[in-house]
Length: 159
Image 1 (cartoon, rainbow, N blue to C red):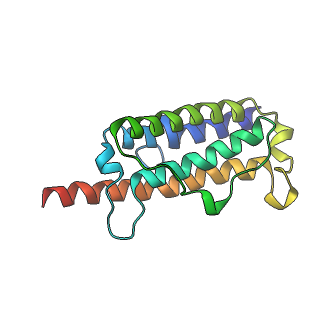
Image 2: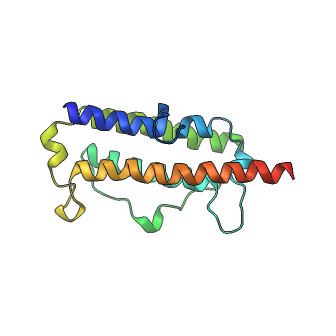
Image 3: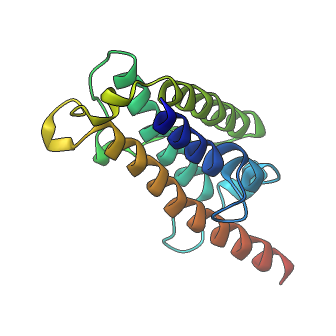
């Protein structure tokens, strides 16, 4: 399970506690984002809340498969989320992503090496390892977007 543990560490780095690749992670980056900042729309860019939901959507979808469920996530629904209208709504989304990140990392860490090589639901989706690494890469991609949007919001509020 050494490979599983290493992959779980990489996942936790981007979501919960790392600094190595991006010098930040979701938990650090979002820790001081207000719900108004999270929902602030800059032209046609996604909001921070939308991107946070989107990343969490995919994490939750893979957890469902890890726990014996079917693959229910679909790209066309990955931005369909309830409006964030208050601090409580934003906190609920953040708590959900942190909880899912911990659960996801735990599943990966305990995954037997041979399971990593197995087909993920259907061989057309590749292996479990490919999908887990895809979530890590996808998360870093959107972490960069969130970081830039956050900086833009801060600069706009100054002016």
